[in-house]
Length: 303
Image (cartoon, rainbow, N blue to C red; front, side, top):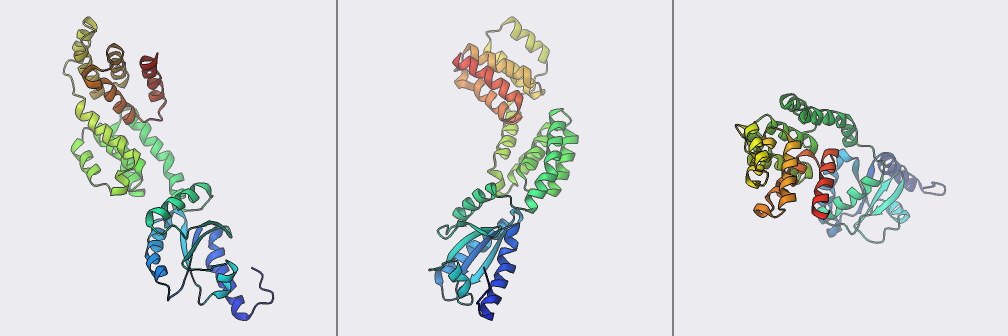
């Protein structure tokens, strides 16, 4: 905003707006709330804006309030004709009109869309960049079968990012792999409601369910020999797959589950396919191994 021809009060208002709104918007997403003391709807909306801004502070969102009675010149520059009027600003430019987003859910949905599109600087992004390789290391160690070391890694990550879904999921799955199922169940039960809804936590829950269903077999080699001698005994093959999953042999388990599906895809109400899909979720749907097994499953179902 040019200051030429302005009154001293208008110049002061512009400088204040630059300092409190425009400058922070160079790196942050600024929610601008145009309001007035006499405005009932403004007062009703204020707690919603304040809560959302607090929830999204680590994502790089800040709230700036502009009293239109005290800042009529600023309100006029933004063509504010009614209040509350709410805008989002980034790098000095208005990027969204948030006026019609009156609920917490609506505001968060719009902010999530903006944050995906804009290069906002935030503590959350900095933390994500720091812990991403550490999460990958923990997953690698867990995949290699060293549950205790993986648990140690995820325990340390949980101190840094206690509500990060990938960290919580990795820690729970490490507990399961270490045969500390009761602790894993307690960890799931203690998760905050929003965190518990994340897909990474679904993966951990699937791991616990699979662990309970995958019964260890005392004589795994003997059962394998029995299945080799009687390949059409799908019940024995299913028990073998469960024993292999309990022993950490996902290759053998997948082979036997796929063999059951190939022989009779509806066997035991589709139990083999359901178990295989749980195994996929536990390993990770983006894992190359899962992609390969999915192709094998598709070839059986549609070949």
